[in-house]
Amino acid sequence: MRSRRAPAGDAAGSAHRSGGLRDQHGRTAVDLRVSLTDRCNLRCGYCMPPEGLPWAAKESLLTDAEVVRLVTLAVRDLGVQEVRFTGGEPLLRRGLEDLVAATTALRTPAGAPVRASLTTNGIGLDRRAAPLAAAGLHRVNVSLDTLRPDRFLALTRRDRHADVLAGIRAAREAGLSPVKVNAVLLRGLNDDEAPALLRWALAEDVQLRFIEQMPLDPQGAWRREDMVTADEVLAALQEHVVLRPVASSVRGSAPAQTWQVEDRAGTTGTVGIIASVTRPFCGDCDRTRLTADGQVRTCLFSTSETDLRDLLRGGAGDAELAAAWRAAMWGKRAGHDIDDPGFLHPQRPMSAIGG
Image (cartoon, rainbow, N blue to C red; front, side):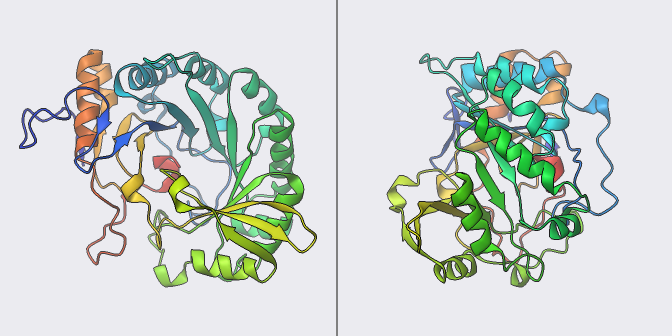
C-alpha cells in the first residue's frame, strides 16, 4: 500500500512536521539507504528465483537527477548524515560514480561531509573500485557466502566466484576500508563454512559479518526453523577461536554485534553477527530507505510505502517532499514483529527493496 501525501492532521500534533526524520518511538533516522536498481547479475536463492524477477520498467526508476535531488533534500533538510547505495546490484547502474561524487560533495547543515558507502555482490568491482574511491566513496560491503567456487555456483547460479574475490582485493587496494564481507549461512548448503570464512577474512584483512537469513525471498519459502541462527554461528566459531564480545554499549545503531577474535596462531581481528531475527536491533534503528522507484520505506519489513517519485514528478516543492518523508517516518513501527503470529511478509523481495 502506498500513500502519496502527508496526513493533514494526527493526534501527535506537529511534532514530526519540522526538523529531522523522527518517529513516535524516540528514534531519528540519519542513515539513508538508496536502492539504484532492482536488477542483479546473480540469482541467490534467498533473494530471487533461478529465472529472475520481473524487473521494474526503466521509466519507473528515479533518474540520476531525481536521486540527487532527494539525497540533497535528505541531507540539507532532514538530518541525514550517511548514504548507502544498494540494489539489486548497484554496480549495474550507469553513472554510479557521478551519483557518489554528487553525494560526497554535500555537507550537512553543521558543515560535516556526507559519508557514502556501497553494498554490492562484488562483480565488476575490480574495475570500479578505484574510480569509486576517486569519486569520494568511503567503503564497501561485499556479499560472499562461500569460499568454494562449486558452492558459489550452486548458491548464485553463476560462475563468478573469482570475480567477487578480485573485487574484494581491488576495494582494499583502493582504500575503501574497512572492506566488510557479508555472509549468509544456509542450512545444508554452506553452514559448515563459518570457521573457514573467518580464517580467510583475518588473512585478507577484511571485516566478516554473518547475517541471519531474513524472510525476504520472493518465493515465501523462508522458515525460521531452517535458519542458521547467531548462536549456531558463534558455537561453530568458538570451536576454533577465542571470541570476546565488544561491550554492547558501543554498538549504538550498528546492526552487527561484534566480537574480538584471537585464533590459535595469535592472529587477531573482529567478526560481526547481524541477528536481525533472533536478536533484533529495532529499538536503535536509525535508517530510512528509498527504493529505486522512489518509495520511502521505514523498514525492510514494511508493508506500506510513501511515494516520493510521483510527488516529485507532479511538481512538488522541497517542502512538500520533506513533509511527506517526515510523515512516513513518524509512522514507523516499533519493530518488525517477525515473531508475531500475524507477521506479514513484505510484498517486495530484497532485490526490489534495497539492502
